[in-house]
Length: 180
Length: 195
Image 1 (cartoon, rainbow over the protein chains, first blue to last red):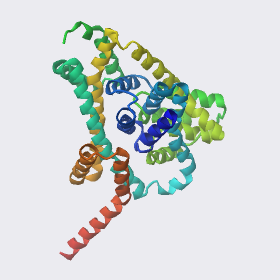
Image 2 (image 1 turned 90 degrees about the vertical axis):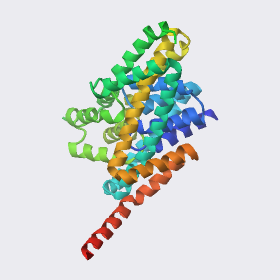
Image 3 (image 1 turned 120 degrees about the horizontal axis):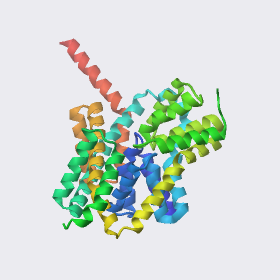
Image 4 (image 1 turned 90 degrees about the horizontal axis):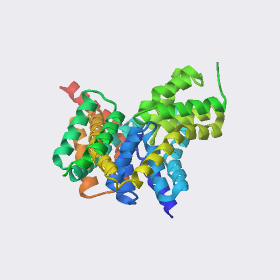
């Protein structure tokens, strides 16, 4: 039973994500945390942090970890296949057909209209992560870390993976000695 | 020189899989380098075309491209081999690291790490939200853009409707959006001509 849920969860999240892996993150959150409750909010954010610190496509890393947690090696296989097989097979099969419709206003319109929904889901996710980080670090420290990482990534163009690793180091060495 | 062996396919896919940082879309130049420049599996124009088509389909982009390159060089089995080679190393690393962290969750060291990385993830998600939002505003204009934000917010958070249904409704409108827009523009032009 759980394997079927794993398949459905990742199939739905990825078949609805237009515009590459990142657009599926809020959809996977919906399935993994809200719907099936395989992970908590904090677990999910941890996994995102690790996933972003490691190379490679993000949605397959998330699928592999969640699949493993839910039902071991078979869970990994089912989650990863549900994530990638439908769209990969579709690309190969539809290549000739789609070639004609690549510039079609229908395809363009669909890709465009998904953006506002994903944007709103991302904002909600941002809000939840922000609330959790204030809860676990206190508002002052959470806001300072957020501000520094924002400046580092946007103004100084530091690679997100490096920002995540620095945050991990700070968290491991400094945070345990602070009493909040 | 054309090189169509499984060994080359696997090497190229492992390399693009472990050298690409920042999710699928950022890996496309690496794929192009392997497929066009190094192994000459296809011409630059064809690669550009496949990329455009892959973008029109849902789902992760990197695995779609890996699957196509594998299929192009070695058929269906090639597609499977290419995708596995592309994702396996990082999937294993992810499971190992994430499992290690959840085993050690109660140690203060790991607890601190988890806490300190939360605000960073919140910022990254916020940036992604901004990116998707500005794409929507650019394509739809300010008025329609904000209208879609409000409709999406009300449907997702206030009613709330399952995201799959919200996306399907938006996709349905998306299929006719450009047609409607053209019609409205033509009307405007006619009105202007009448004046």
